[in-house]
Length: 280
Image (tube, rainbow, N blue to C red; front, side):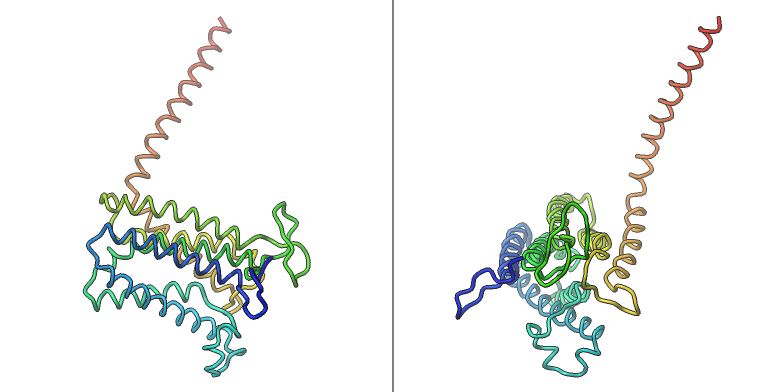
């Protein structure tokens, strides 16, 4: 692991910080390209973006401090000095940012459901860079393992899971899927705001899959907060998707069910026919 990418003595460049900056600029670039396809004003979108980023930081920090209150207390400096007392709640940041963006769009009389679709792919990019950066800098630590893919972290005993890298690669897949869905929405094959539900579902799936192999988890009443919230989101949105795509699912089952039934029927007839010929 490489926490410090470049050490010039008087200046240290941290690996995680570099990945965060790269993720931010690539996300901004893709958002700018997406917005050019719409009638939204760039100043409105970027005003909303920076306000929602502030909201994400504030609420992510607030939830983390609340769940670790014994370590922070009512010390405002500890709350503000995130570099000295690090920690954010991912779900707190996501929902906090969305909440502020929703308030902003209402104030500017913009369509939240329409706008959010163009923000999801950049958000996936930012998460992908953040998770991969967390892996290379040693911020995201996995649990001990004897699995084929493993690594030794500085300051931790034994070989451990590459959990940050796994999540980063999952978010790269999310980028590709979300970008394709965006253009399906533009062709009106899905409703506006569909990408937000897909993002929350995919985020919950990723966290659900890898939360148990993380060394440091955020707990609430003895349970992993991220795992618990992910399970609720997965179940809720999965039921919504099943209902929304019910016609397609039923058609798929009917079509392939008939093919399987015909295959079994033909195979049974051949066996019966072969048996009769042999008997005569």
